[in-house]
Image (tube, rainbow, N blue to C red; front, side):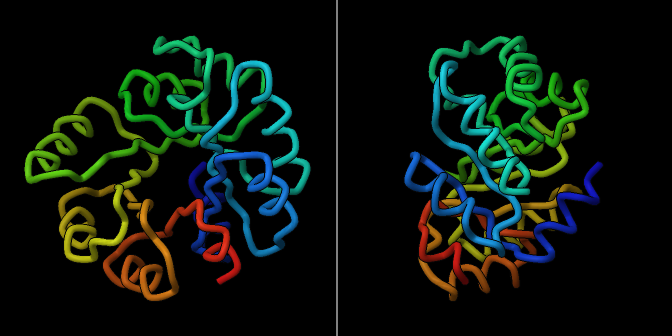
Length: 189
């Protein structure tokens, strides 16, 4: 299942993360963008957002924790799968990742690297659940990205605060498979 995702980010390692309808409209028009992280919406609008992403021929990955009206129970993942047809989810919650794996969706577990305790948290969480990928934020710390890539056997996506080509290259050189960004200028690089 991972191969399609790998192939798409290999073709373009920049993932468009969208936070509003303007971002949705713009990224769907960009040929080079292959994967879209959906970081907004609610239970009334998410199906239409996913439909537009998929209609443009891109993978739709929904950050289930950010969709208004969904709870923190695993049934939220079932809703995303059945009602939207999304290809995968992003979550900070192991139970959500576990359920999405059961439903054969792509899974991305998001971690915020705030201090040295984050490294222990990553190892603890990954011992409970095995996502397809992890996303670390902020993604502008090549030294930390390198350390995490050596520490885990899961592909790393760098996200957050990526503002230019130099940030992209640094993250990829440090071992990240791709970068995600809401910065629309980055999508065109």
